[in-house]
Length: 426
Image 1: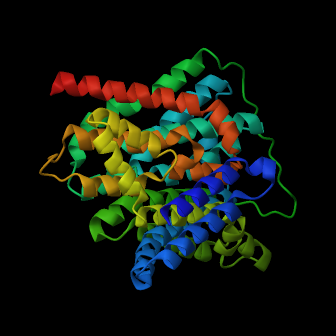
Image 2 (image 1 turned 90 degrees about the vertical axis):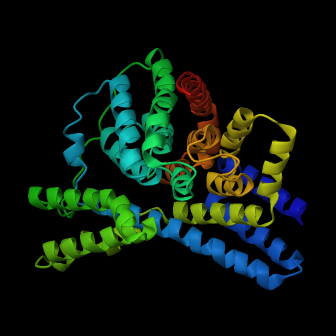
Image 3 (image 1 turned 60 degrees about the vertical axis):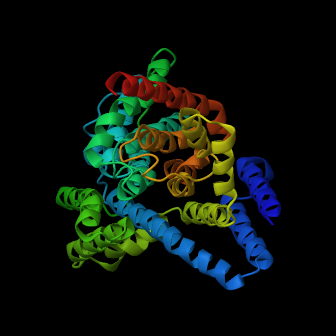
């Protein structure tokens, strides 16, 4: 059973990577391998009821992530429809490619720590569409945004799902993880940027404004209001989670509902065409549904690998084969670029107890860094990468050729920084 599921996963992975060549949408492939993996598991299971129960448990987690993604995308689309991002683009006046890259990267880095890497990626890529007209430039910037978003999320208890899991599980504390990982995370981002500083030249060309005569134009008050409420709704998500202890997708849905009411009241007196243009219904039609389905398929597939015990077995094999915590954690981090980091961290939490590695131990802090940033090595290795891949139609091999080595260099540099820092301070 395990072998068959692994073959299905590898075959699907290859199909996703070669999407452009085989001309089959990656979302279709992801959904297919997700369903097939679970079908094989259920059909070969001696206890079908138990297998179905596992599927339902995973589905509750997966649906939360999918609803979060969809809600965040609708909020961003509503801001975009009202030209809300003009507020930011007007503040960024530079056309120098390198300077703009540094500005965008560090904006992403710190915003990711406050929001999370997934939401930040959606917001920043939407912003890039307003700043860059050349698709090649936009794709490259999107690739660096993935590195920046994952690096920014690793050092904050709210910035990445895996760091949040370790925080909730008691393996790390909020203040300590910020203090210990902020420098390695900055190094993870700065190393690729410094390298690019010697390579990147020229200027970017902003897109030309194209306003159709039939397209409504939001007033300054409407634009500013929707931007403030929309960004405020996204920033309120971690606060909502802390206050209510409800999962993040509930916070996003709360923010979306508030913004929905605001836009309904704002445009209630307008003609039908204008009201419909600024509606949530129109925003829902604009979001990239295929990227959401791709994300759903990948998560379903990985949940099957987790349920069959393949991920846990691999982690056990690492522990027995490599008797070195540093190498084990770095290997898990790189593995998260192939398999989702959430089940990997969940498996690791189950394998190692707090009695063996107490709270704020080197092992847990290093695990937070490695699983948070290691996924940048491949575009499908993180939620940020998957979102960017769907929004900008980034090809797997394009990312592998142009971004992966930069991400790997940053990952290793940050890891070395943390190890040296830990030895000096502890």
